[in-house]
Length: 153
Length: 120
Image 1: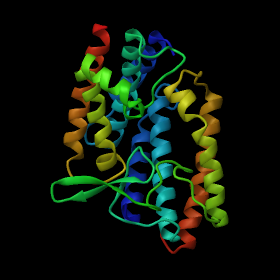
Image 2: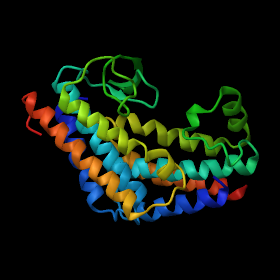
Image 3: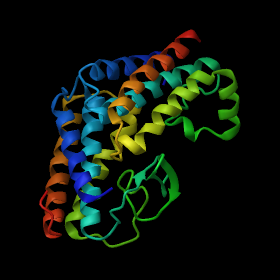
Image 4: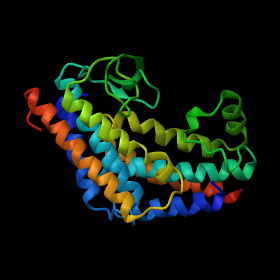
């Protein structure tokens, strides 16, 4: 997607997250946070020219994108477009320091995805604090990366 | 996870979904995908397709032979989850017009998936 569209997605997912109780609604609270963070990171990667801002949307299969056309959309193989998750697909490039930090923090967040959302690990205040703290650090680093690339987050 | 664990998880997500509106299509579609996948796993476990030790995260990741068999045994179940998944690139990770309609449809599809799982 284009950078502005990623920033808009970030805001939309954050608005969703605010309506959830972090423990009672952990699954969708977490999913909103994960999606918001991934959107902002995609925007920052585009802003740095590491990945391409195009009208192509990530599918569940790495390197397969949904590309709009006159009748809706079709699949295409593309490379270095939006990430589905941090590390998916993997980027074989050196990241700027701020984005390295953002990726590191997002990797902490991602550890909670399958065991706590798709699985049945106990949802505790400690889990919420760990995820929320990593998200705050991740977003601070991503905003810094956007600023360094001349994009106002 | 066992079918009982999946059901508890699906119902938690559905309670959270009830706080959302189709004007928030991204999280509605994602919530339906998450809850629907728990119901999908209930169906797979009850049908003996997979054991509680082996959950499926996405229907499209099923091997071709299992997808074919499931499409013949439970066509509505598989088609419904596939349709929800088909909305994600365009409306969750993308910004094509029609997201609100897709969110409304996703909620209908969740009922189809649940009904199929409950019949087993």
